[in-house]
Length: 178
Image (spheres, helix red, strand yellow):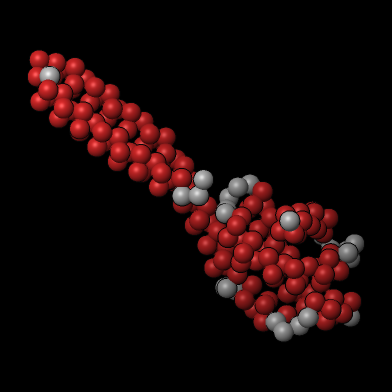
């Protein structure tokens, strides 16, 4: 089903060519019945129009999903996530967990941004707002790396919204583990 819009575009072209061929044949072979040929041609053109209209919303939806997915990718490489990644870059998952347990304020602040970002990714996928395959490819390694620190950070009962955030991130982790 990938590139479904290409199949519709090819189908529309084939139908238009078929309509033209039928029209030419009817005009040359059956000149007395040209009116029937024109009617048939009109019906075929209407059919092509119906296919085009039916396909338009699908193509528009696919373009919107791609745009939304790329927007999330751009946000990953912009502030505040870019600065967040600088803070945690080069640290192993165990080092990040240790930093959270040692109450490292910079790492905890970075994790707040990461939690919010991955929570938003989860919501975007659940609502069908994005292409999951692109997000999985781009963000799965990062989620796997940061997940232990996020889990440790969100285990603190003082963190507001921690339960909802962890549910969303757990869902994302499970979907991407399959």
